[in-house]
Length: 189
Image 1 (tube, rainbow, N blue to C red):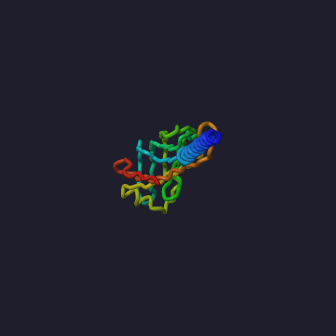
Image 2 (spheres, helix red, strand yellow):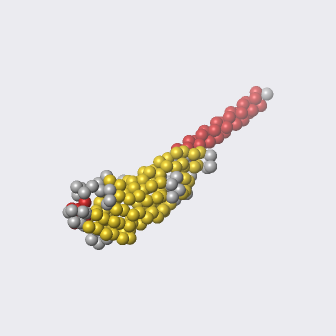
Image 3 (cartoon, rainbow, N blue to C red):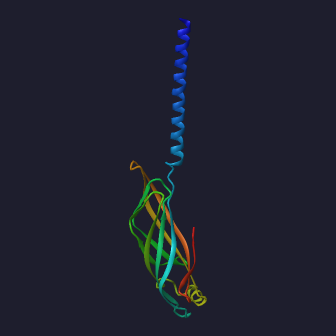
């Protein structure tokens, strides 16, 4: 009888060990899933390329001015395991802090682990730039430096259950060569 009790006690202990091992293994899997998959990152918004469609510039000291038509490719890189759905927004181009043009980024969705590409056409002009600025010297040198800014507000949707608000910012510097009518420097933060 003691032999039978000892065997059944050993079987019960082994069963408890298997159950405890299974619980520990499931806990480790859940923790790894939460740490690596459920971590929601802010999507990255950048100007991928900027092409000058048309450019007219007047570098006279009395009335410097420019009119530029550009075609910009805005990319939204989503590194999450869920899609990023963002509202429509505006990308603003400015010269020395003064807005010179605005383009529209349409409402869209960047799929999980993908990059969404959006074409934006913007007309820029120097009407709002003060006459006492450095515009004449910049146009004479052939380098027109512009900054672009946009903020995309949206939500990352994970498994159609979890929704987390995320805002992505675009902050880029564009240097336009007014003589060759091309963009020769494009940097984004």
